[in-house]
Amino acid sequence: MSTESVKDDAIPSHQSDCGSEESDERLMALICAGDQGALASLFRRYACVVRGVAYKVLRDSCEADDLLQDVFLLIQRLCGQFDRSRGTVRFWILMMTHHRAISRRRYLTSRHFYTSVDLEEEVERSSHSLAKPTQYVDAVGEALEKRDTVRSWFEELSQNQRETLALFFFEGYTFEEIAAKLGQTTGAARNHYYRGLERLRRKLLASRVSEGRRT
Image 1 (cartoon, helix red, strand yellow):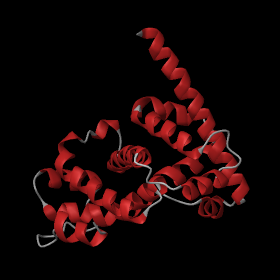
Image 2 (cartoon, rainbow, N blue to C red):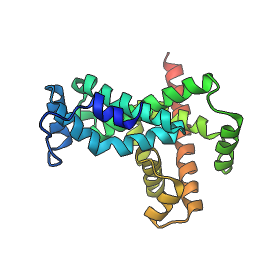
Image 3 (cartoon, rainbow, N blue to C red):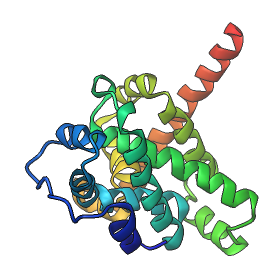
């Protein structure tokens, strides 16, 4: 489905629009009360970044469009589960997006959706890493499900690593865009990305070992 179908079908705008001044938390409360205008406002506020994250993981425009619609339908259905004590609305939406995108990528990979050419391009783009990018993405996806724990892990990263990972995974920026935004070279942005991911991967592996011992 296209992004237009989301606007037309999933998020009707014939009801009063709440406007851009409402806080995310207020919009969530209105959505839970059945206000379609609030859902439309939240869609306009986050559609671009949600699609950017979806495309970053899925590498396919149609799949990213479908995931965009899926995420906002989920927001409408699961709005009552949002807990502001565990993070902001933005954090909740982006974690949901990343989790759904990782799950969808795993499914598509199991169905051989990605061609050998796609995989070769992925490996070429990540020639400086110690593992394939999909392995890193899966590791980060699993780590992000440990919401409380991963926050402390992020705090242990360098500022450059934190900013680079946040811009890449949560904002959907390319390495070139990250480099320009942070005033660095593209090579430096890649370096911060892979070093940060490697540190998170090691934390995740240690966490798995620890959980295994407890069981």
